[in-house]
Image 1 (cartoon, helix red, strand yellow):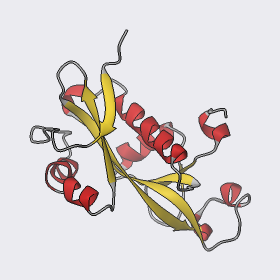
Image 2 (cartoon, helix red, strand yellow; image 1 turned 90 degrees about the vertical axis):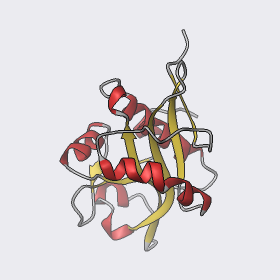
Image 3 (tube, helix red, strand yellow; image 1 turned 180 degrees about the horizontal axis):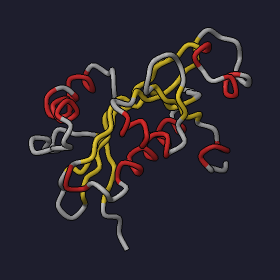
Length: 168
């Protein structure tokens, strides 16, 4: 059995013109802005490609960042050094094409982002996301994220082997 999708780095040969997640700001960013952000090295973009048709089924962006230690939930912060900020990977955007909804592709994209952050040679403590609305926040909470900080829908997931079930 072969996989239905492969997740790879966005490239110029990927046709983004017909991508529609039903969320216009995410679609517009993907069609018009993401290439510039990648070129400027302010984000990386990964796409899910349907193997049989080569259609883009979804995407996410990932960038390095930091958050104030004071914003980290106490149960997570107690095992960290007392630096002012904590290094994180920031999941900037995640979207699935309307034609591929309900196939757990969003979870697969999220998992891929977590694994890329863990494998990175740049150390990061957690994956952070600013969910755009209640529905997106519920998606991230379902995958183990917890709210933190003073902004609504700001969520964090520590990237420890114990939390994600990876053994070394």
